[in-house]
Length: 266
Ligand SMILES: NC(=O)c1ccc[n+]([C@@H]2O[C@H](COP(=O)([O-])OP(=O)(O)OC[C@H]3O[C@@H](n4cnc5c(N)ncnc54)[C@H](OP(=O)(O)O)[C@@H]3O)[C@@H](O)[C@H]2O)c1
Image (cartoon, rainbow, N blue to C red; front, side, top):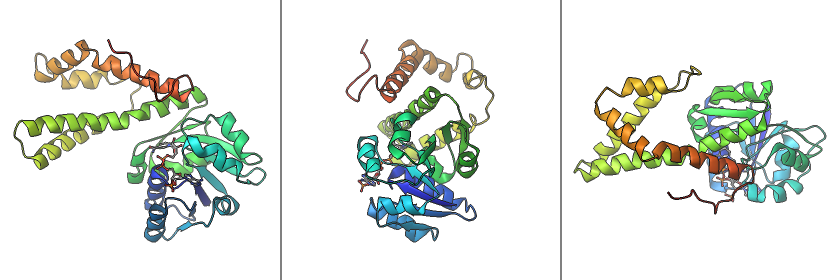
């Protein structure tokens, strides 16, 4: 299948890398001619990747076009493009709802909104999509865990939850910085922190549908150090702030808040 990407930024790089590493048969990939170094590097690394001369060439030569520009420029980029009648389009754009994207790509056909994450490059991580679409699920299944929903507000919730990536690394940074402050060699501090978080993250990959309370209990030895730190973080509202933060991001996703809105301080 011929895939086109309008916008060759961070998420396109991750998805294209994952797809190429998965060596799906019969795939060809055409990238829009921005982020030249990144797209050129992808084309040099993978024989199936090519850089187009224009966004229009991407639309003209692709059976399925992925939209991966930032929302701020999406309307300008898409209104300048002509899609074929019924041409399939899928959107990665987090904050544009399907009604808006469908209008912008007409007479092309929006077949879904998709929320990939950067670990797609390593063929890991969730890929939420709405509505369910077997063709997209089959295409993207090799590069992540596909989760299909019919309700677009649920897709917005998944997009919102993906805002935990930078806060997660900030958490690792705090732990490693604390270890360094104890006089530990910087490389050892980073190795220990990365290895600790990677190891415990592996425990959470089996879906049970019952949340993660069992893992909390398993790792909180009675009267032990994990139990104490969890108790203290709960007491200062650390986890409630995470939920309130996700509410804020969800509100921004749905146009009820902006980048300037902040969490209320207690
Ligand atoms: N990053 C993520 O984890 C993630 C996950 C899911 C969804 N998304 C969504 O994916 C979209 C892209 O995010 P990103 O993180 O990949 O952003 P990014 O790294 O900033 O990439 C945006 C890309 O759009 C290109 N671009 C700008 N104007 C263009 C134009 N007129 N024609 C063609 N390309 C143009 C940029 O080129 P230049 O570099 O030359 O300006 C860049 O290649 C966003 O809408 C975001 O919501 C991102």
